[in-house]
Image (tube, rainbow, N blue to C red; front, side):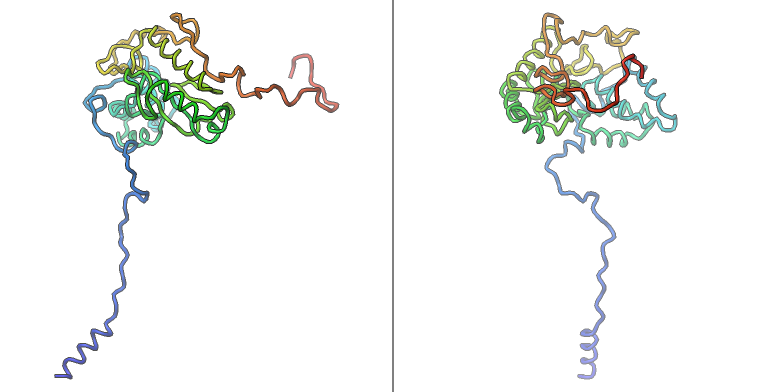
Length: 303
């Protein structure tokens, strides 16, 4: 009996251990899970779903034809970013229907368009107000001038909404963003396509009041960041019908002046402190006298 049991026990003790096999798969994402999927996932909503039709209007179709001439025919998908921008300017935001139309025009998979639209924050994938205020709060703007914190507080106090929100009338959308590249004129904000720099709490409130008055004077409703015209959703043009745009383009639209239009005066974009660009506000500190040396510049106006 012992002769039968002992060899079996011996074999169990000295059994060659199995070599662990490493798994041959890995997760799709190596980053930590985030609480929000706003930048990665599309959720259908009454204002943003594939069933809402979208086509480029006649003016933008001409622009698309000009844009596509810049690329070889086999590489026309490289025009995806300017076409998304055109769609956003027409509708007011980059909806899923805009992305699908861009994919159709460029003959590329819709997923490739989604990848671009979800990567760049310049594409607003949800409706925004007529005036999209993007306030920079990175280090230079926090330290420059009065500081971006006071600008943020002034905007919140005046509009009654915090970052990431839109006013009830749909006129203003307030966002907090990273560096916008105007550090020398900090603090600053971007409103739609324009930069307003060297701000103070008083000047930003004055600017917001002027924008509100201009919109009311011209009859522009809130939420019409796209081209003007009727829309059940209060947005821009979602169809290719004529939107008061003649052969000369958008010149028949309401004027976008900064002074004396409809009796409303708007501060001009740029520095609000009186300087022209980014020169020293205290005055010239270099090249204040004739440069030393024997070299002389020509005085006849020729190079």
